[in-house]
Length: 323
Image (cartoon, rainbow, N blue to C red):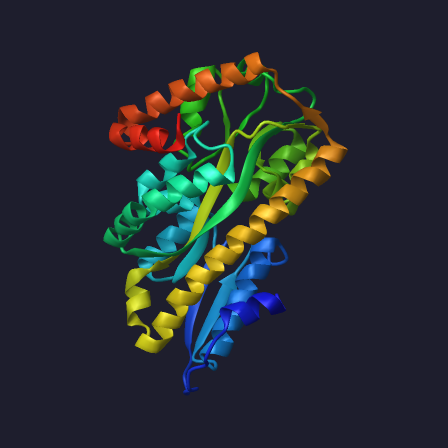
């Protein structure tokens, strides 16, 4: 955290009475890798502005789920948030297309496509009253289950598969395969896993360890199903209301915090997968099984292009990702 604060800090502004406070929400626990970077960012802001700007973080879903946080930002009850693609899509729906199944399975491809798409996403968010201060990642999503290995799409039909209530992609996957997902918000997932109401999740290893989901499961797929993305967002109105010098510090350090978060999360996600793969049964798919999943994912993307997202957007993403 000290190193992060030093990197983010720079020449301090002259201190003045009456500090500005910017309130930010996140689902992440305070002691998680995300939380540590956010706290480092807050310390850097305090140092660089000599106390003129204070970042007040609300960790562990204190401000509600991502949809509620975005609603609070719109109403002025919250200034910004660190959100996943679901939260980003509540601001500008097309961002969620980046989570189309089978689109990305490694960081290099994600980086290449996101760099190309970022100006379009930033413009879309600005038109909806938000600014994207920095991109961030959640991790490489893998399927985890209890009681049996998930090797083919048909294996999900007899399982209790989790789907985020606000995710418009999950129902399309469920429809294509032929199962009914168990809908829940993120804070509801741990008790649902504990009670057995849910026994299959597809999430990054880091999220599974930080939020204690993995301990209720016994199988993890080696194959990456997708890449979880996110970002640091803020009300454009609130940002523009800040004094000019403070606003520039927030924007520049926010971008740096996003880059720092990306590096840290990727490292920690790899460590988390290494840890749980030693304690759970690792499921390795054959070439034929991978092909079956790819066929399903391709059909789901085609369905998503029929109204969930513009067909031109899905085609563009597939072309950029080499699909």
